[in-house]
Length: 268
Image (cartoon, rainbow, N blue to C red):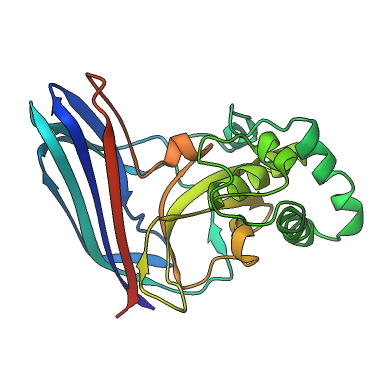
């Protein structure tokens, strides 16, 4: 499948910003099952200072805001060719050892709520894939999607306790935390998905991957109850949202800011 992506994010500040630095992970990964045909990034109100590949093999772009900027716009667009691999990504290809993906973070710590949710899933399912699919289904059943209840900073255990996942990041964090508690390496994925009913979207998507013996990394989109197929574009991976966030940064001053996001994902 050939997917055309257009993603624009605009930050507006109530007062001039003397200094700001943003870290972007907005360039999709090229690997088996996914090839970037073309991709561009345009910055208005700032300038690209550096670009590098981080420990998770993500392309990271550092953007400095123009001194005194009151608005910065980040616009990326391009075409990505994908294929349906049943969610199988394959062998680990980053620069970190596989055991690192069993380490918990603040957002993915398996507290009592996550451990209770994951309890017994191995006994109810068969092989590794069956266990992980059963875990994904159980998370969606126990923590149904409900917009506006949480945010990307909500921990996995807090989302389970609340009983409702407000954003896809919650489902990804819960899956990662629970899979690690079951002794599977797991990681967070940020990217895009082509929706069936519309092209325009107001946010990027997130899902999770677990490492399965003899298969490698396999994706699980808890929010949609499936493994990623050709409609999905992988952009960045990390131990949690903070390690794979599309945009993060710092700035001086306490001026209020607003953010506007416009995304279109269409089959070409």
